[in-house]
Length: 79
Image 1 (cartoon, rainbow, N blue to C red):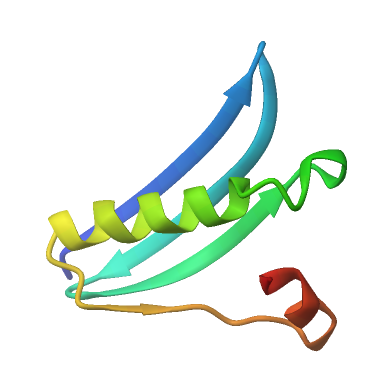
Image 2 (cartoon, one colour; image 1 turned 180 degrees about the vertical axis):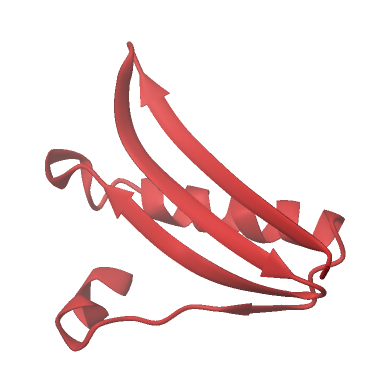
């Protein structure tokens, strides 16, 4: 069986989930399964914080490549 991890991060504030990010890894590669931030808390850097934290965790586990697929209607949300 391949060397696998499932990594999930959650940002909470006062028992409310503000955002989350998931990563599935096999061997030295990872696929971002989802990144989501509450609509009313977008543009505050939460998504950026989640992705930077996930990349750091993945690197610590030997992941050398991470894939992220973005729907065409999600391109503007990458800013």
